Amino acid sequence: MFELRHLAALDAIASAGSFGKAATALGYSQSTLSQQVASLEKAVGGKLFDRTGGPRPAQLTPLGRLVLEHGRDLLAAAEAVSDAIDRFQAGSGRVDIGTFQTVTNTLLPRVVRQLRDVHPDCEIKLFEDDAEVPQLEGLDVLFVDGPAPPDVDSTLILRDSLVLLAAAGDLEPGPVDITRLNGAAMVAQPPICDQRRVEAALDAMGVFPQFVFRTADNTAVVSMVNAGLGWAIMPWLAVSTLLPSTVTTHPLTPALEPREIHALSAGTMSPLAVKVVELTQLAARDAARDAPAGMIRLRARR
Image 1 (tube, rainbow, N blue to C red):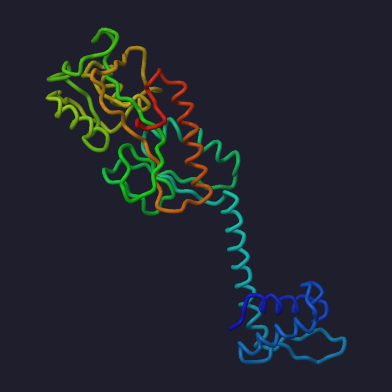
Image 2 (image 1 turned 180 degrees about the vertical axis):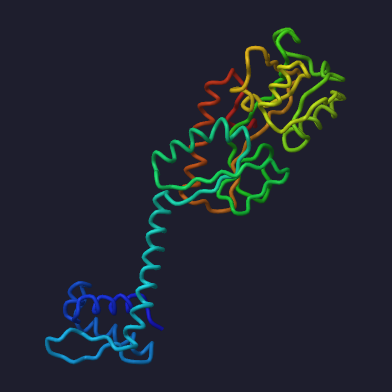
């Protein structure tokens, strides 16, 4: 079986026109180059050059022309693979990120900008999905809200406190006893992911709101609350950039368990994917710094 170095030797001789010039270009002795050609001829079952001797250029046989034509395709493909590996190791290439509204709107804009600043040739693909069961297949990184599955690698990004939203004037400033939600008109997201956990926690406490409107859009939840349709329980980060002055936020007592945002990966990540997670952690740190005290936490409680 021939090797790429044998094809490279064939290409060099054909390009240089002689064994001697090709050997010099490749840094080989002429005898070493001749041995490589002999090995290639043995592998393909025939002569590749008509060795006429003297000053005439090395002449390819018909078989030599055939092998060279396809050999150059193989050499180009090998060079492309090598180049792709070099770019991969340097942090370029493509990264596919699974995400959802909060991460897309509040964390990833900064991450994508910084990633493009450092790696302007990288390709970043975002896939937004609020599926109940995280689907990692085909993704380099998947951001989810809620506990990470036990069979995947997970990095905690932040813990996001849940707050009560109300139209201005509906409630006195400050904390609200959670029992006041029993029977209250509420706006909510569909009962999946973190919303499902919120409703399960309320049920466990004997608190049964009246859900009058559901929407998967964070902005729509805030708008419905602002219109006086009902109150809503939302993660702080999900609404922090959406709140008009006519919507107030209130801690709940007792507080509901904060939602967790994790970055999931299926095994070894590419350097670019690792950078995505690192930059997202930095973005979460800045979000925690800018939020009211205790709203965003970067480490799980022990």
